[in-house]
Image (cartoon, rainbow, N blue to C red; front, top):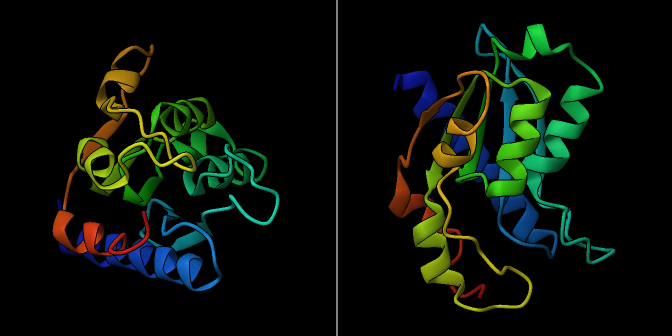
Length: 156
């Protein structure tokens, strides 16, 4: 973990806040290049179509994989306000991301969301998903977990 990691992770929290302010769920993600430059950002895309697969990380990885090559993405970092779920971790893996830094753990998110029908959280660490793959993905997190959890106050 570096100072840059904390700065960019907090920037993903800002993306999550903007998603909440726009009326959707408070999740945010950004893609940083090998030099730390922010290449893309994405808030939750559940609304307006009630897309249950509209997670910020999954949508961002779709955009990234259609813009950059896997070789380039291997040197990039996905910063996300919450730990990638199994779907989002799979999307990051298939896109070719080399590193993930996250705030709120899936375990804690599940405690916050309970059985809310708009977020049936899987308590499955992304390290397990990535560990099932054929290439390594570095995972850093949870970091700043209380700050990340605060994004969800009163939402679920």
